[in-house]
Image 1 (cartoon, rainbow, N blue to C red):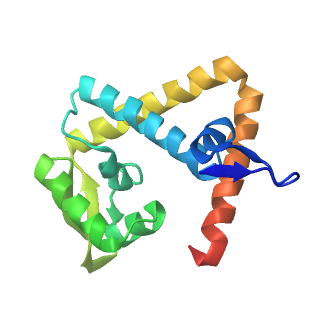
Image 2: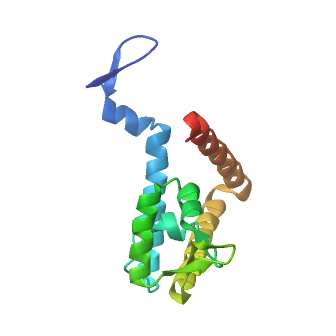
Image 3: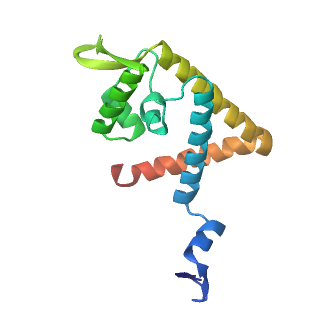
Length: 164
């Protein structure tokens, strides 16, 4: 399939070639996400957490040390409550989290990191900080800050689309 040049109506090459030369936001976001996840989870595996997978980030990436309700993890990660429940089950089985009664509402449960979970959280924070430092050194702290600000704004605008 060829892509038409909008101004001239002429074919400018295959769609895949066009997306390689001028990737859209979805492709750029996916490339960044998958690359960061790969580095993060490979490094975590080297540092003693080999059974974690990127999907676990929907819980572990948003978990507070004092615990977080599953509904809040769902909201923060943008992941369906059922999926979060399944991930919590997996992480509980792996020894990273436990369910405890919420002192604010005994009917509710808090998802609380175990010692292993807190170790993973600290290491993940260190790994992510190192990734950001590497990019700041390569492109300059100010440019990285501008990029993150713009990226955050685009993400917020996209999330606001149709109330996502």
